[in-house]
Image (tube, rainbow, N blue to C red; front, side):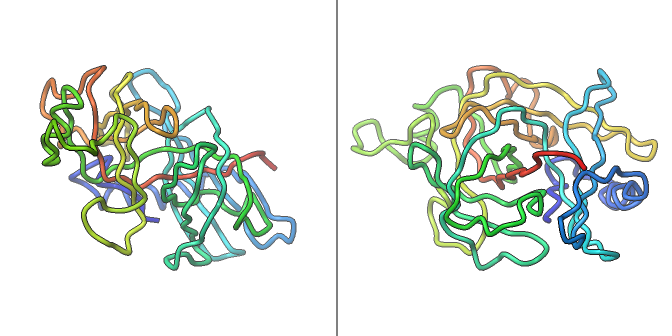
Length: 249
């Protein structure tokens, strides 16, 4: 949690939630912990445009109790991260961390399929797949326009770079678990999900960021026609999902 439904749809959220819960009955078990305490289930999300799997719903159960439901996007490129600090928002249902990559770039992540790793992960290196679920974003033709929008002048000493990432809100202290991130749009595709007979449309953009090329779920309601294009830059406040999935049972 959270499910980030605002990135996928603006309307019919109740219908989407009901469908997600119903699909648990047909989801496939993907991992069982050694002590049999936790079972992870997955259900593929398939775009109706080209019958392509674009992500998955992940269910975490503790014996007979449903602990957590989450959504991640497919990303075949794993990256190694050091788990520096566990955040106070963490619980049995989900864990949040301050992490660091090989270039000492720090940002915040939310764990998915956390119980695939049964030991304590604090202060360890782990391979994960990342995906972005921005809840606020702006798109710019170039970095000059982006800096101007941030109130940064051309002759200012410090300017936002095209791979900037900050582990919390740029302008205020917050207890939230999101990061501020900038990146270049390399490609994007429209996605159409059939949810209980209704169409849900959104866009997956592939963004070149300071921590690699990451897929981002963008709600089409928030995008004006022609706004999104290859070579443009996105500045976003985003939740970053880290998927630990390594093997099936």
